[in-house]
Image (tube, rainbow, N blue to C red; front, side, top):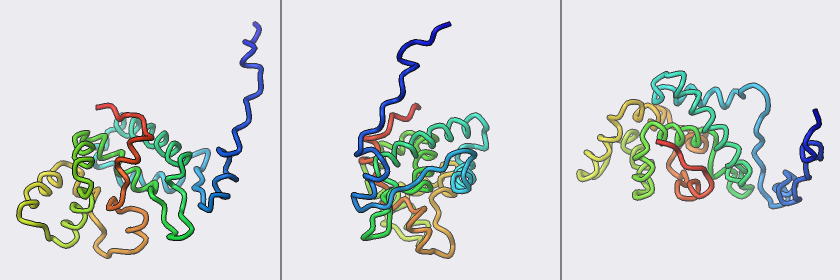
Length: 186
């Protein structure tokens, strides 16, 4: 059998702007995706989101596929790169994993977070401090009473800067992220 001519050609090289060196020239610290078996960070994300996925192997596999694709896209768009001025990335694997798990389990939270960009901040604040406007309490409790949501968005008992920088959904750029991601099937 003969190979199709297009299979025999070498892959074209990436344009300079897409190479990692170009990212570092922009002044950003590029995020590296580890190849091979799951990295410890990805395993940690999976352990964090497994409750909202109902410990269901099929849902976990679907989540991992969506998460890996989203991680790759976010990395290629520079959303995972640390800004040298602030030392923070717009998106981290942890926040991305939480967002993908939440929107996979409850697709309506996607529309809600677009309509109310402070939704994740309000949920975290309410869980940490127990404070919310009277008009918001029932709204927040309705989200927190959905299976797995409370565990996924709860801040740790001892709040750390590391958790705020890597795991808090407070600043997750929902609308920006949706412009680059493929739609999440219901």
